[in-house]
Amino acid sequence: MKTVRQVSAEFADQLSTIYDSNEVNSLCMMVLENIVNISSAKIKAFPETEISTSESEAITNILTRLTTGEPIQYILGYAEFYGLTFKVNPSVLIPRPETEELVDWIISSVGRSELAVGKFLDIGTGSGCIPISLKKNLPGAQVSAIDISPEALQTAKENAELNEVNVNFILDNILNPVNNSLLTTHYSLIISNPPYVTLEDKKLMHTNVTDFEPHAALFVPKDDPLIFYKAIAEFASTHLEKGGLLFFEINENYGKQIVEILFSKVFTNIELRKDMSGKDRMVKAQLN
Ligand code: GLN
Image (cartoon, rainbow, N blue to C red; front, side, top):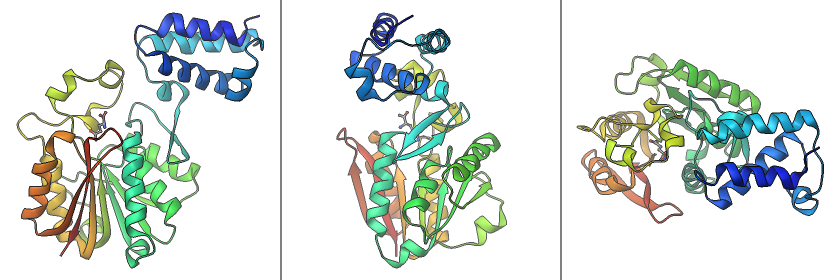
């Protein structure tokens, strides 16, 4: 029978060309914890722990998929975000740590103000990680979310059930919305992490993103990279209540342009914020 130590060595051997050693280590821990169901503390303390033949086979299968660059979250079928678990599959983007920072900023911005018990809308919700984590932490809000993809919306609905929160999901295209409730509601908060990756950025991206994650959630046309920001700023300028807030996750290269778009739509208190890597990553603005 194989030991935990041998499994770790196989991971290092097969994945070192595509991941750095810290990543290999955390992938190995995630897989062992998931398949063998032992804690990472126990894995580290007792490397001679033996694993069964069936567990070993399951681990080999996962390792084979990992060597193709497939993200671990798609293989295991879930991802952690803001302390919650979300189902993920190739119809949705894997939730990112930068987006956790955005959620954190939203929660601390609305705090106990009146906005916190208003209506929220998340545009391009994907797995539903933003509206679900907001509803979990601001239970007085009425939270809605839209996406153009029926498959993504189905996943987001399952995630709302999994996390036991009530979110109203709407199938629609923010570039050409038709849903009546979407168009007639005024929101206290509008949030979006729309597609923002340009072809230039794509060249620099890891293939485990470009080969596996949904392109519709990531990429924008070369000739109009801010298409979603313009449409959402316009929508928000007519669908936020007075004093309502708009939050965006953004492409680090377009902070200035996005601030200008918001300025031109008469938003005030516009604030650009960096993520933990020091890159311009999010914007907050208030409607006058
Ligand atoms: N931050 C994501 C990435 O770099 C992109 C998210 C998006 O396009 N909204 O993979």
